[in-house]
Image 1 (cartoon, rainbow, N blue to C red):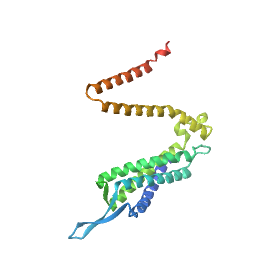
Image 2: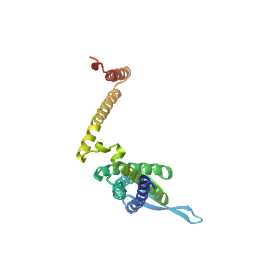
Image 3: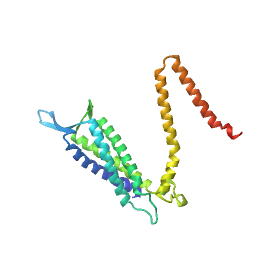
Image 4: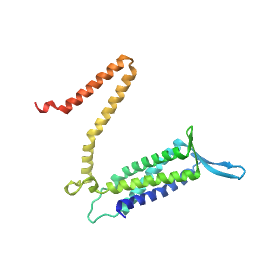
Length: 238
């Protein structure tokens, strides 16, 4: 079995087991949720146990547990994954934050999708049978664990990012400096564009009729003109 596939399988299995442990801890907290018996067939005496919990408390708990579980999965995959003789790997401390974020995003998205499909959400309260909650939790843990394991296994190897030979950073500090230099300008640009867009939206909302159309047209012409100027770069031929 290839190393990447093996890591994903182990990560998914570990994530599902950690999800069960987290569910046991979370389900025992009476302040966050409670279990109620629902009678399905009075004649036959059939019923089921429904878990009722605040959606906000559930989502916060899932994110916290997913981050902790992602750190555990990342550490295990990093420690037990095989590598070729002499192969360098990035330090685990740089991968742990990414592992926690990956696990939280995947677990939250999977849980939301699962609850939307099999649970009832009314006025901020989630009502779901205990069996369905176990299945959804295990699915969220497995997907989050598998995704986290895949990310950690891939990014731990410099060759995956194209770092080979002399391209491998000489030290962790050099890698962080180069990474900050590479993403610094785009990040600043994104922040500036966001601030400009929010400010423009507030201005347009405060205007009415022809004034808002004129303001939008002027700003659009300025943006298009500036983009054309940068693309043409007339100063290079001067």
